[in-house]
Length: 282
Image (cartoon, rainbow, N blue to C red):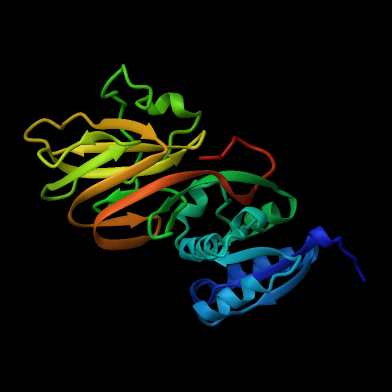
């Protein structure tokens, strides 16, 4: 019988939606993980059982098999229990997994499971709002599909908290700002400095954690005719105020709210990613 070190003992938590969406990928992932480590498999049927399984992990390393919502749920639970910094997560994505893939997790069941066994823990930044909600990838106001940011235009060269997204790191953050019908009047502040005020209608606002403990912010003013140049800023806190607005945080639509503040927690959590290849920290 094979024996494994304590560090090779895994708690595999399989989201029920993953079992319904792609049972074959779940089976393959379980087989690969079981062949390389001592595994205990949990099959929670709901949020309470999911939280109970994660809370009783002991010394086992938690591995999630599920979609983006599963990953966000686990990070949220650990953050609110103040255990996030001490618990490295791993994930085998099944279902809608754009967020996990954007963080560097392989998309295939075999590749993702092997990354769990042979990968390296990477510390990643996190956005935390004033209601203790978390954002792993990006948020957009109003909710919109993810796209790559436009060319940066600094608002004020005299203020150090404005910087080009190109200079923020080798890989620009994926932001969730695309024009949507109508206009929204919002006041957006970065580190207490206004980027746009209520007198300037905007089409979209996006925020994403960037390298070095700062958030990358993009504001797209309402355009008439030619597309308006986006306004870019970066800082450690972002506050948005306005009439009731909804926003997409990772895979979830939140709100309506009239005011929300996000702050960056640098290197707040760890995710197991492939040991080789380009850096994937955001």
